[in-house]
Image (cartoon, rainbow, N blue to C red; front, side, top):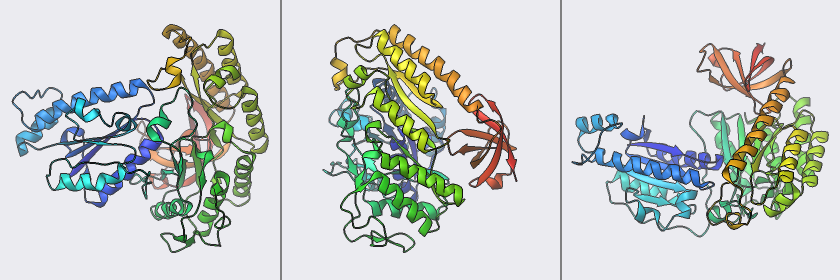
Length: 494
């Protein structure tokens, strides 16, 4: 049988889709070439912005039409669904099961299926572990089975995309921050930290599959407060985890910096091919001195012992705004001054660090003076890249009802000014790296030139260079010759 994923939103959704895909693959399912030809389509949804949900509603309309074609309904319209029509002509009517999961599914858990009968299953945040039942029902041709949510969030054992050298590893779920513009705590729930030995066991599986780079995921990773499961256990290769051999195994609570130290130690102890470690998303209020020191120490150790795991010197630290007044209204729980002090400490402790961020313009009551502070912060910090957007009221959040809503034209104007500034800064910051020789993880063949490879740097930049496909999945040295847009062009150093 065949499946097809449509995944929208954040990295956590990508990881969760990958974890479900692993279940399907283990059951012998194959990935369909398109949605029109699959036995089960799975839409993993996002609720962060209303526009994301609007797009999903449009997709549900598409699938309603597709189901009619697949069922050979008399009123089916085949325009733009020629693949499905040809499939049915050859094989006869073939049912299609549609599953909607993710944040939008959780938010509209009670109403989505009623309003959109085309949906066979609505799988909320706390019901993803029921996919085995859904798959069995589809395989056996049964009518949709009832899906009940569990009261406790369950982490998938592995969130790996087949053939990938870089992958996501969820370590936390949910958020306790309740930023006034954000719906995540309402659809993801409170923070849950994954047990340490479960994380290490997943790393062992990833190591056996040749993964070279991991990104630890959570809505707020640096508020991680985990522990070893009772009794510890063994990893996939038989190495004990959660034992007294681990530095923090006897601790009742393990902080995020301690988790990073444990992961690095485990990678070295198991001779894992994993070399680069990233993490996101992180809240500035929880970015501790201990975390900065941990990143600095791994960077120093990797310089002294090439091949040692390192926490990559490309950090994403969302500022969201440059005005302390607006930050307070956002309930971000730090000031502009505190954020700037954090940036200063990071750059002093970790040479060569590159920073990226998220910033929102047009928050309710934002004045020209507030905007000027956001603009000046961007100029002062000089991020290498930024995700920039304007405030979009989200139903169910406090900010949607705040006084002083900014008109759309003003929001767009302020956003464009920030975008223009950031584009200039990005070019300048990246240009400063031209002429250096750096380590690159080669990961794919270039679509534009099959004699070239594309790779990523420790700072999460892209580099194109001539090289053999046999180098894919390996760390190589590349001299940065020039900059083309936001992609470096380089020469392989042998």
